[in-house]
Image 1: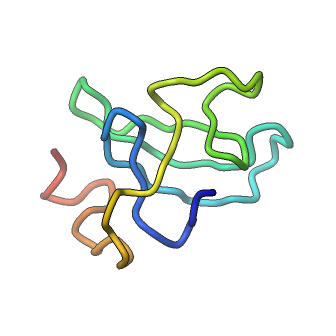
Image 2: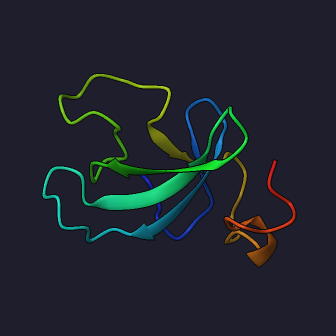
Image 3: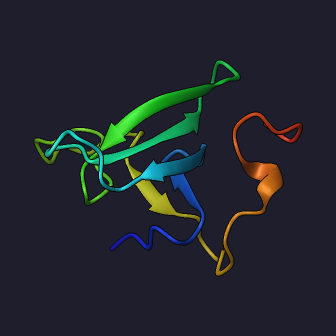
Amino acid sequence: MIDWDKPLQTKKGRKAVIYTTEGKDPEHPIVGDFWSILGYWETAHWTKEGRFFSGGEESDFDLMNVPGSPRPMPQSSTPGSKNDE
C-alpha cells in the first residue's frame, strides 16, 4: 500500500511528485510528474494502487514509496528546483 504523504519514486528509482489523488480519470486518478531518463519532468497518471497501466500488469513507471524515507520530500526536490537530477 502506498502512503501518498511520503516520498515517492518509480519502480526504477526515478523521483516522482504527486499533485492530486483525485484526478478526473476514474481509472487513473493519481496525477503527478516523474523525472525521466531524458532529464526532464514528465506528467503521468496512475491508478489508486500506483499502477501506470490499469490492466494490472507491472511497469517500470509504477509508483512506490522511497525505501527508508519516513519524512516528506523537502521543497528543493520538487519539479523546477535546482536540485533536479
